[in-house]
Length: 359
Image 1 (spheres, one colour):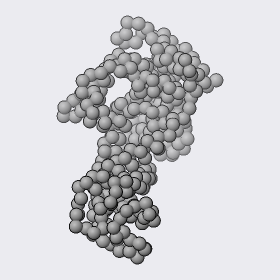
Image 2 (spheres, rainbow, N blue to C red):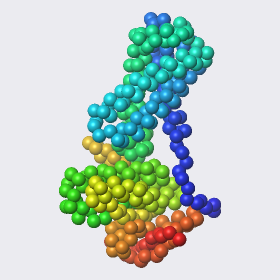
Image 3 (cartoon, rainbow, N blue to C red):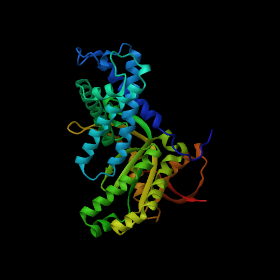
Image 4 (cartoon, helix red, strand yellow):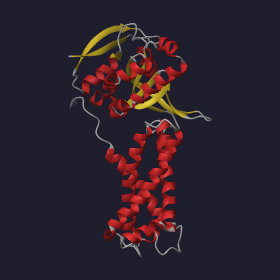
């Protein structure tokens, strides 16, 4: 069986632009089909050919997608909600202006009636009722995209589409990897820092784990207090040692920001984790508040393994079952150390525990 070395997750930027561009192409198609202002002599709806409409959607998608992506990075550093809303408004306004300007410069690719032939006419277009109509349309479509983006982000990447498709309306069995990770000595730091500052610490830590989660293609299952539960389908998690690499990537992120944590909290957070794999049932649960939940021995075992980290003075513990899967498809660049054979609560058979260290 072919083995993989640890590598960086392939760039998903093309997938992002494909999705955004396709959305805007569909939006422009509907704009062409359901004309908002059939009396306007100059209208984006009156493009004579469907190809021109689709090309307009492609340009709009690229422009809006690029500005939106930049805005999302800026939002991470904006402390006030009002300013983030203002930034969203600017995304749509600037995108509408740049779309018309781009189409003006690429006029030969489009078939318009009475489209501006010079810069003076372009300025007149920007001040026309038609442009304000286009601007409103950008606000409608852009806001809808951003709402779906935020909902998907709040639920967890990919969860929204699973809800919409009813993928787990009936329970299904899946083989998954679970990683439980929490802050070491959390009670001590909660008392030392106080509730407000401790909550900010947890916010910062879970914000800093985001890059590791995305890089290693993980799904966030739950945030519970100072604990985060991550999961992968078995094949995705063992590929390139993602389930293990994520933990070390996160430690590296914390180490790079150790001065920030020391300055703001008087400590550098230390996390411990347990990882296990196995079969679980996946189902959509709840009526007043719905979520996708996992049930089964695998998730309970992962939690109990994480709970043993302090007992063995280890920051990471991996079950023997998972280690076997990892060895089958990867070249382990880390040294494997056997820790113990333990009988976990509720289990009839003992579980081998391992950890990793650099060669």
